[in-house]
Image (cartoon, rainbow, N blue to C red):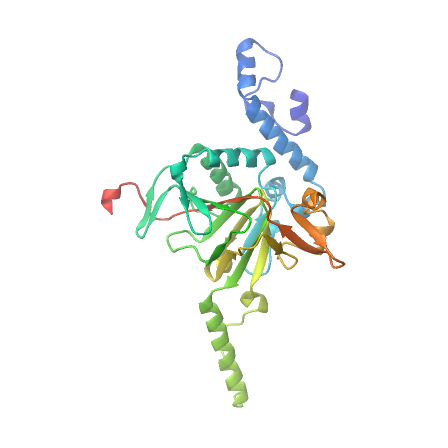
Length: 330
């Protein structure tokens, strides 16, 4: 056991395990921690294996810990989208799914195009009427907060959405009650998420462009103080969310764009900001491509097409800045 820990660069004392075979009380501690140990070792070994040049294309939390920065995981040109593949291990995904479907039936709310669970309390116009998150959610939200360093306090609200293969969500923005950073953990099935400029942004850009064109046509050559935006800042874009990945977005991507998922069970994702020639060549899709069931490369151009064959779950994790513990105060 000690040899295994040494190979992984771990300190055996940090995990409640005896450094050498010892008396029965210590062995009891050993076996009590064994399931946790197996989970941790699986994740640690996977991280070690993935720390090759190709893994830096697909990413891993080990890389974040080593670099101390999320910059490696920024995708696209619109500030700021952070995409972290394989944020959790298979066994962690399985446990989350088990906990989600093990929740009381009353936790589910059925909408027209999906079901959802609301954890953390009710978001009121004056803030959050708070309820404690269950421990199985707190473990993952605490990890997201600590390892991203982007949230001002503990994540206190989680929406769990369930999508059937042909279900999506209309273009929308998160409300003003939330701190302007959102983290979305995807489970079970891949999906393409679309980002479109907010209609107000489009109108402002068109108005500014027309104003400049008119002044040029009228022969005016004085400098015009118009905010310059790149084409990328005003164009729609998409991002491919693979199972077990974490997407975090903030800044303009949060405040100036709507995000949505189309009601399609087949989606083409060549133009996704996190799908490049390198990610295809270095096996980003790995076993999914080999299975021929979820991701296909079609035609001479290697079009990437995903088939939404399974139910998808997502955990939308946010911070509500105003919290009310006592309903009567409202």
